Image 1 (tube, rainbow, N blue to C red):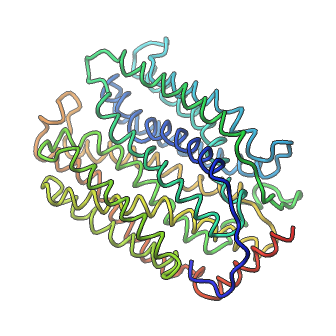
Image 2: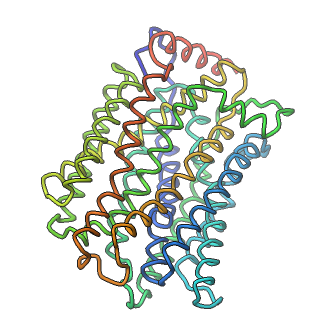
Image 3: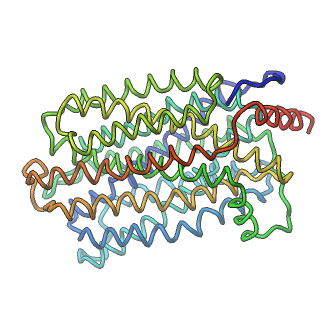
Length: 456
């Protein structure tokens, strides 16, 4: 955010609150990343032998369900009234079911081994798991906007979240390729690890709800129905521009996790340790750069630079991703992009919500989170489906080890992995030219909103 001409009194959130919120978000994201970030597709297609076309259909059907699931929950949560607040009941009491559905994903259900049985199990698991993920993750997602008013206090929470989010991203990227059962191998060790992770996830998320609470209450019009609320979100022009970026971030996070499962097997000349070292360095560099420059350059300019740099790295990987120097540069720029997605995007989202309140007098974090998920959850389905379809078109043979695939099939992995992210990032960079929430005028609006909330 551009430097403000007026400075409100400093607002603080305790370290304990930030720690438990971010830890819960980390475990929630880790489980989701393992399941939707390529793990489920690998387990059902490569390990259990499900047809990739049927798996793609599952992801598409699942994406349609999310068009109703997330906005509905956002609408309901904004209107929830309880002694615990609007969000915490969903986090606390949904955690056990969330962990349960995660665990049973990795066990073959006693409904047969046919393609139809695998289709039913995969689809049912996604529906059950994501319903609980929506309730918990959406509530955790909006908590920083209800725990604090000022961008300074919020950004401090997001800096904590970056560290924990890196863990939630690293576990699927690093751990899953190491523990995944190869076709024909026993999945016993894999299932024990996944079960243990599910139990730990439940314990952490449940315990976290005793360490933070909502400060800013959502102002809502009780007469506004869900359809009217959704339309109101899309009338917010900055929100529409923000959604282009939000969709891209989720799509890239998903397809990168999907692709990395195959990448290191296909290009064994690229050491995993070196690549992830470059990714980590890029993330650290990005965190330092974006956190220091947002005050001077503003969120908009920092995000524009992030998109251009990340797009260049992704484009290079499409054509030369099998070369070690290019791979290291690509992973470094991806790290910068991840840092931007974890720090800049939430700040922009907060501004979009604040702008809506400024224009309408209504505050509806849950509704915006739900509509955001309406856009981004299909990105998860599309990323999984696109990767499977593109690699299939390039001749990837699921009956052959990845290292033994043809040169064309290996090139297809790079195209499926990085081409669409590069295109989407360029579109984001262009759309940001029309994003209006920047400059001194917007800084003064933010100051007025912060002061109004301090008086509530």
